[in-house]
Amino acid sequence: MTLKLGVIGAGAIGQEHIRRCSKVLQGAEVVAVSDINVEGAKAAVARLGLNAEVYADGHDVVNSSNVDAVLVTSWDPTHEEYTLAAIAAGKPVFCEKPLAMTAEGCRRVVDAEIKFGKRLVQVGFMRPYDAGYRALKKVITDGEIGEPLMLHCAHRNPTVPENYTTDMAITNTLIHELDVLRWLTEDDYKSVQVVFPRVTSKTHAKLKDPQIVLFETRKGIRIDVEIFVNCAYGYDIQCEVVGEEGIAKLPEPSAVQMRKNAQLSTAILTDWKDRFIDAYDVELQAFINDATAGKLTGPSAWDGYAASVAADACHKAQNSGAIEPVELPERPAFYN
Ligand code: NAD
Ligand code: NAI
Ligand code: ISE
Image 1 (cartoon, rainbow, N blue to C red):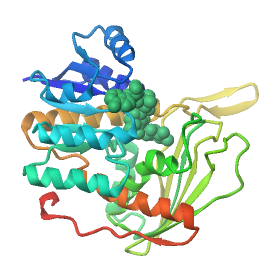
Image 2 (image 1 turned 90 degrees about the horizontal axis):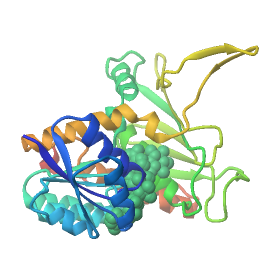
Image 3 (image 1 turned 30 degrees about the vertical axis):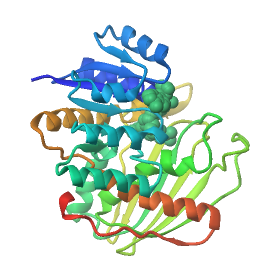
Image 4 (image 1 turned 30 degrees about the horizontal axis):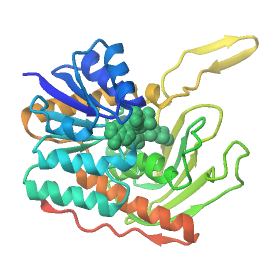
């Protein structure tokens, strides 16, 4: 059986996901695409030579009788609306992160899914599908470094556009760590503080960059994450886990080592599309397989909610400068 996909949002990642679902992965076909920039959507469909209907309104994609499942790859503030629409239509939906702009919005999705009575939502948290993060997690769960005590992480982008603001460092960027570090440590956040170092001259008036986010988890692990989205030199994701008996570090992406002009060098990637290219393939193949089988197993609406509860506390901490509590309610049995 071929799963017929409708995609809402044909920007950077929308086009990437349309390409991989059409040309790389098995068992799916993109039959409908929409974008508020309709000409952009038409151009994306034409470039890939697809036989897909282009709609001006995302709700027409969700409600098309030809569409079995939906990918939401439009701007962050649109995710909640389209995900709720897919649930109302009873269709599986892969929603890029964040699931919604606030925990309250994510909770509406969780409540709608529980009311529907079956999991329909997978959130686009791809890092748990990344081979490097999986290897790092195995070292921890095998007990090779003892109990984790501290994590030192960095999320660096070379540059961001003018419309990227201080709060987006949390909802658009840190949200990946907010999810993957819960998964990695099998723990939840207890409190958070945000510290602003000297500001880089490469940023603009509406973005304080870099930021340091400090967490304490329920088990007492201390985590520091540097978010630096105008770091200039590359796209660089770091995660070091300090345990009782040793230290484990996220592997670097493989790159050829060069000896040339009296230099020893390895290239650093510059684009998120390349850094997690395999993980995006794996997460979406899982979604296609699971949606076809009628049982989703990937990052859930609850995971999206848990990350947003922490994100809300980070926003509060950005503004107060204080240590703010992260209060995640108990997980409903539906998600066990
Ligand atoms: P983008 O700006 O390149 O693309 C977004 C597209 O959505 C644009 O083409 C825009 O016209 C369209 N759009 C906006 N509102 C829409 C609406 N209501 N209906 C339909 N289309 C709409 O952004 P992007 O980089 O592709 O990011 C898209 C989403 O993917 C974001 O939510 C982002 O957080 C997420 N993302 C995730 C990762 C990841 O690593 N998991 C990487 C990149 C982007
Ligand atoms: P983008 O700006 O390139 O694309 C967003 C697209 O959404 C634009 O084409 C825009 O026109 C469209 N759009 C906005 N509102 C829409 C609406 N109501 N209906 C239809 N289309 C609409 O952004 P990008 O980088 O592709 O990010 C899109 C989403 O993907 C974001 O939510 C982002 O957080 C997420 N993302 C996830 C990544 C990941 O690693 N998982 C990486 C990059 C982005
Ligand atoms: C983007 O939306 C992503 O999700 C990337 O993975 C992240 O590194 C970047 O900061 C976001 O803007």
